[in-house]
Image (cartoon, helix red, strand yellow):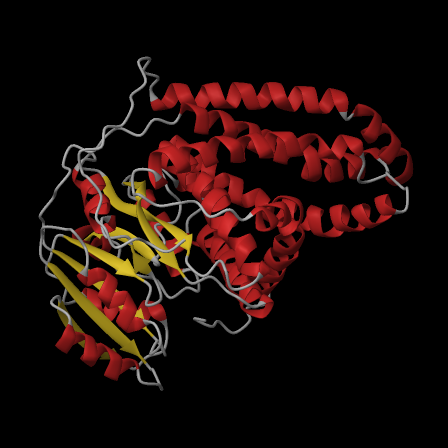
Amino acid sequence: MIPKQKPIDSQVEIPRKSIYIPVVGKFWLSHCFALLWLCISIYIAHPWLRDLAYHVSYPLALLIIGGLAYIPGYMNAFLVISLILDRQPPSKYENPHDDITILIAAHNEEDKIFQTLQYIDRQDYSGKISVTVINNCSTDQTVDEVRRAKKKLSIDIKLIHENKPGKFHALNHALKAVSTPFFITLDADTLLHPSSIRYLVSRMKSSPEEVCAVAGSVLAKNSRDNLLTKIQEWDYFLGIASIKRLQGLYQGTLVAQGAYSLYKTECINDVGGWPDAIGEDIVLTWRLLQRNWKVYFEPCAVAFTEVPSSFKHLVRQRARWARGMIEGLHEVKPWRQPQIYVKYMTGINFIMPYLDLTFTLCWIPGLILAMFGNYLIVGPATLFVLPLTLLSYSFLYIYQKNYVFKRLKLRIRKNITGFICYFLGYQIIMSPVSVYGYLQEFFKFKRKWK
């Protein structure tokens, strides 16, 4: 999915729902449905629990089934109803013209940085865009490519240098010179849809005063490379997007990702900029939420990033994400978050290591046993979660197609093989990788930006 070079019509109408349900009502209604689903799951899975308890003891059987079926089913049910009830209000300012700054931290990006700047130059945003590229210890021709862009493109580009390695060093160095009320962070390999910045700033300008950041929607741009990137295309399009929408509905998007997000400059200065962390954007976002500020998500502010095309790089990326989540939990405890929605969503992260461990140590071996006719751990009852997952993906697919892609004049590529592999096997890769990330943080392995 590569962005077309044609801006979209700002006057597209968004269908509105006649019955208004406040956010707190959606929150508890979704929980009630999830609780009902949990009760049904417990009833159906009782024979499974009884048989497994006979071999491994009742507490251990409950721990295993809780991690494989009960809790994932509850979370999926909560997600499905939340997505059904989600109705993002229309923007009040379709064509904002505030001056903004874009910060791009670049380390050895000679083959990507010019195209990234080129796509910024093609934005339909009516305000002034100033771009600051922070060269962070590059050893290739990144600097020359930025200088070439300064000569050939019409946007204002500033090149600065940060000799301390680390993305947080680069961004904090550039933050000191930001004079605009809003700024955007963008990865050096990320391409923007022509109307992306307009949508991102519009969402911020249409939001309450306590909103301090808006996360953009990041999708895969190199999905045709191989099977691994085809699978990740669906992860970004369905998995990550669904979580972002859920969190955005409850006014606490947990990661205003550094790859593409908009921030209020004074809010970032108030929390001291980016922390010294491998998941610097995670910790930063949680610090903002702790100040009782809110973080929104704008699905139409689309950017296309280069996803890992090798298994080695995918493992590094996702292990880094898992490690960053643990850093966030260590830095800001869920019970210290002032908003009930954020308490709940950050609290879910507390049980993610348990779920990933259970999946890695029980589901995968159980799946192997099931292939040989032993259904002690993985059996028909375990598959009860799959229809609900498929249902949530269906709702999100319809939303993405009709509300986002149709509006942006984009086309969803038919990637059936990638979807089947993503739906049936992606978690088999991701849970062990996440466990690896947790262990990296536990043993304090050396941190790497890439």
